Length: 194
Image 1 (tube, rainbow, N blue to C red):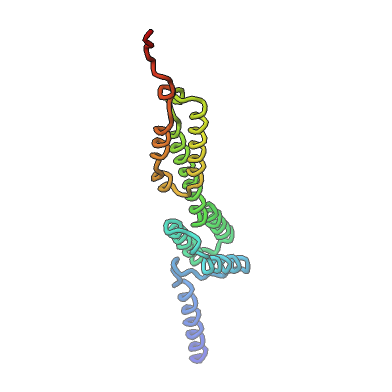
Image 2: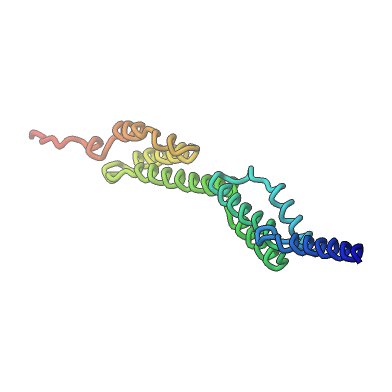
């Protein structure tokens, strides 16, 4: 009997230890039994994060992505809910898809520079207008128009805003001043003596 009693005590102690070890699992360290789909999505998420190309993003976007990945990684460690993991993963990918890459920013900056250059050229060309053309004869007006067209072509060939802003228009003023006006071409009114 004593031998049976010892066996019962050992069996009872073994059962108690097993039960105690199962109950000792805290909420922070759950005994997770994952199915294949959950394992697969976790592996996919981990691979996505590990192989993500941060180099195509600027610092602000990189920081946003890293925050998303930190949250997603935490979820991978704590969740065994396939729907929650899949949904969160898709939300992260969709959010990343809305972020601008460095290339997107460069295209916007180039478009903005091109628009600013176009506006600077238009402003410079507007300043070529000669307000007092009526003071010139037709031949001088034609010469003046040719000079304005030449300068306009030069301005349009410039590639930077700085070049446009620094383009010197004194050549037009000098040229205009060298042309004879109607007043210069009239014969002086002389009183003829009889």
